[in-house]
Length: 149
Image (cartoon, rainbow, N blue to C red; front, side, top):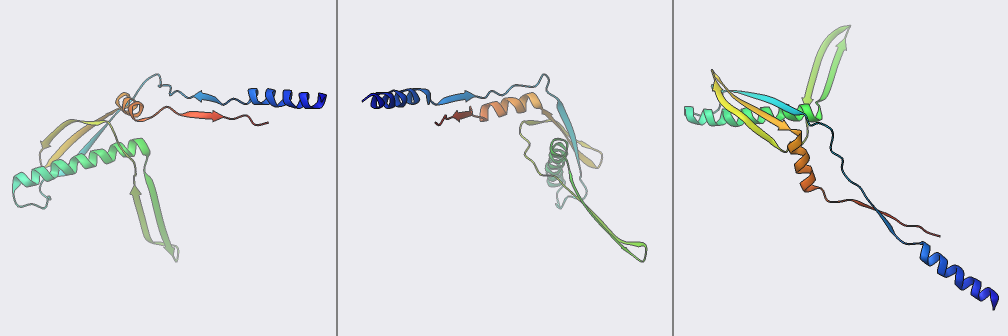
């Protein structure tokens, strides 16, 4: 009979000690937020349109895309792929490719204007704004700690 009570007491103690615990992770903001700037240029004359007004609109769009690419290069870096061929101790072929992949959120157009034969777009990426966007999108994360006996 005594071993039965000891077994029941042990089961009760282990049942009480195996509660689930949750740890809440908090994002800590950095002490300062940088601001990045980028400028994109697009030629007006080479835009594939007959009307000047259409060329201006196309150059506006192209300069904005180029500025976004420059921001992405600053944030994510550039991937460089290079190949060289040598034959009889002479360079016969040399290829270099550059690419960038990333998502830019929170950038704003500071200025967009014609400058001579080009259209120029200036962008700014304020990381304080990026931080706020991140905080709005992220949900609280929890780690569930389970104790097994």
